[in-house]
Length: 164
Image 1: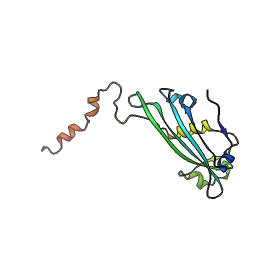
Image 2: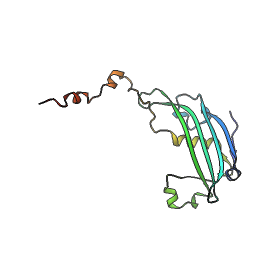
Image 3: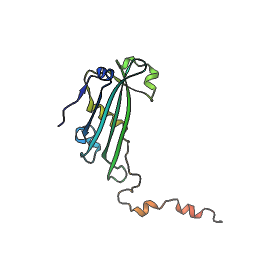
Image 4: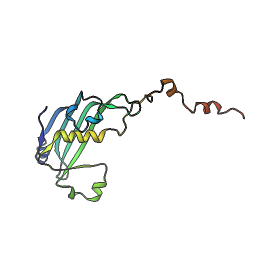
């Protein structure tokens, strides 16, 4: 089991610190039910920086591949994860205006003395996953590939333009 990594978000961001590492899929406990295999993992990089208006930010980058279950054919799909999130730190959720809360282009995170990096990475992955992952080209269980290719509207297309 890997060691738990915790940072002080305020000092990490103000110092412009950077942290990188790898998380095995088995360490992503909230994701395990969604995975078909606990092998593999993700690489991450977290960079702190000062914001323009005196605040601080955290740039979170996550790359990797996870084995998810295709919701159409129920087979494994190797789903590539590529997360790029810029989180703005606030002292508390109460400091945000209603307009800031409704702005989907910005993400906020309260300062934490003990910010668990693995939990943060797992949160960002959960937000990036599709609700129903599926292959680009697959068939329903029990159906043949030929029946999936033939469109039910092909009969209508053949009738198009014929005189009645």
